[in-house]
Length: 279
Ligand code: NAP
Image (tube, rainbow, N blue to C red; front, side, top):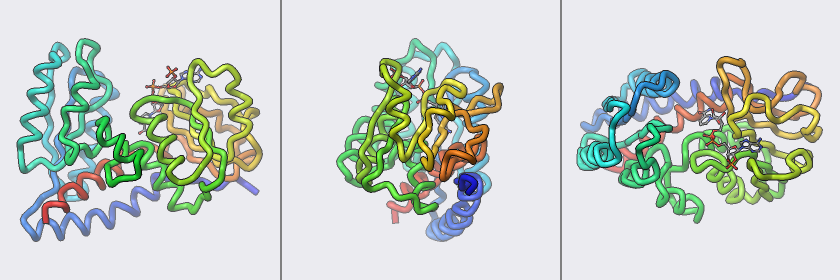
């Protein structure tokens, strides 16, 4: 049987209908959900991602405020910009586009975001709350992946989940979200010595490494659910070798059109939820 396509693009489109309706209702109450985006520097990929997020806001009737800072911005200047947005009662969500230029202390700046406005789920406090199963905006890419798994009724409890990558915005929160749904979770990273062996054991495999096609199809267990968070436009692929995946996986996210659209949709959904808390 061919591997089921976990179509993030279609799911995001479907979710947009509900979001649009909820935004209209909020507007009737005098609240327009508003996302502030902060872009530091001129990285073209980051600029494209921010534009896509702003476009999604516009499409759904939400507002966005674009803060664009020069590549020479210091940590102090960025902290000041974040504080202004924290104080602005018209702003419901703050997105600081990752990565920021190397002279900036990104962690300090992420953690300066008021947790109520941390719709991208990047603060340590938000991570801790999510990990403890408390109400929190989870980091958008893993939270989007969880929404895909839920929509397609992928069983998680009791399954072996292997997350390849341990970044603060993706691998680590992904592992915690799967753990909270009772998977047995293995986290692999660049110092993992027997990567293939771990991957062979995965009922649910998440590739979040940032290396084109690092995970080869021969390493994947028959019938595994394969989630590829990577996207490499130049190579037109993700982090997992998805060619011929039909003969191996039971389900998989395509690249593009899998994880990416649900990341943006989750950010927008979280901004709506943050605004809804005001009524
Ligand atoms: P990152 O911060 O560079 O982290 C990469 C992780 O992969 C690190 O934990 C690293 O291990 C691990 N790694 C690197 N090489 C490895 C190897 N050979 N074997 C095993 N592990 C290895 O990247 P990220 O921000 O998490 O992003 C990961 C991927 O997801 C990228 O392709 C990115 O484009 C994609 N992404 C997609 C979205 C979306 O919306 N679709 C959003 C964010 C990211 P160490 O910790 O040991 O260095």
